[in-house]
Length: 74
Image (cartoon, rainbow, N blue to C red; front, side, top):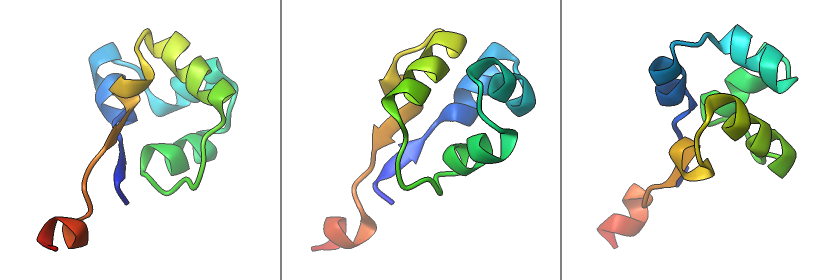
């Protein structure tokens, strides 16, 4: 997937657990894990805003674009 999710990087920087972040954001740990592992198909802006507020970061600190390997080879 061309969108990489760096929530785990921010969790490590903030010394915060997935469970604590999920509680503070107001989502289930399972849904946070889906997002964190890059398996989510979408993310609500309200959820992204809550993640940024709790982690004190910008959306670009959590999400970044990477070129597909197939597109890079073409």
